[in-house]
Amino acid sequence: MFKRKEKPVTKSLCSIADPNAPFNYVEAYKMLCTNIEFLRATQKCKNIMITSTVANEGKTNISINLALTLSGYNKSVCLVECDLRKPAIHRYIDSKKNSYGLTNVLKGQVEIGSVLHKVSGTKMSILLAGSIPPNPSELLSSSTMHTLVDELEQKFDYVIYDTPPSLLVTDAAALGKYMDGAVFVIKHNSTDRNAVQKAKSNLETGGVKILGAIYSTYNAKSASSYSTYSNYGYYDYYYSSDSNEKGSHLRQRKARRASDESDDYMEI
Image (cartoon, rainbow, N blue to C red):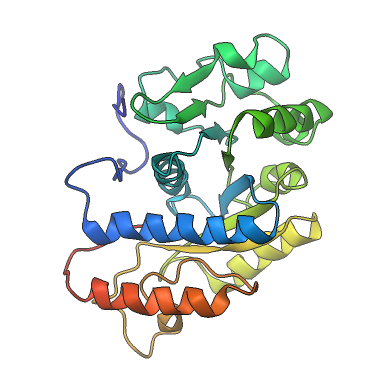
């Protein structure tokens, strides 16, 4: 189902559903899902927002693969495209850019059931962005959006919201007040540390809870042991201050040992 009908603007999707996907790549998503399941055992964690600091950090790829992986655990999952300025998910499915979707539901033009795209062979559905509106932040912060979030929460085990970069526009912060938490995507050796801190601060000021962070394009083989990022380890893409921290560190050490067995460049 994941096919491109037009010349891509963003990177092609490395899907965990691809039988040739690297082992460590797939295992990283499984570990992420395990951590989310641990969080859910102690707090409400159904509506998860994926955001980044700036563009091209891999958040859309991660949003899709996270939703796919969760559905593989027999969970019903809905992926909602909330980047209403530069939508990209339509490139991965058989759909046109301005197909009816989220914005059309919010405007009362269509019912949500008529615009959900079911991913064949999975328990995953996708709600595309829909027609590009002139007022994305206002739509995402509206009471109608709040009602939609509540409706999707009742229908699915997990709802993943792919949002625009949080440093560039206020859309993520506007939607974040309806979320159980946000996961930050940070591109290794690319995103400026001060920019990350500023984006994180913007979300927290808006009342958004940060669940953790995912490192994208991190290569354990080439990273120096003295790198400012090396403390995180290859799969230390998700962190939390909850009581599962000790167990999470153990899983990270095991994953780092597994990563040493491969020379593949991993992107997550």
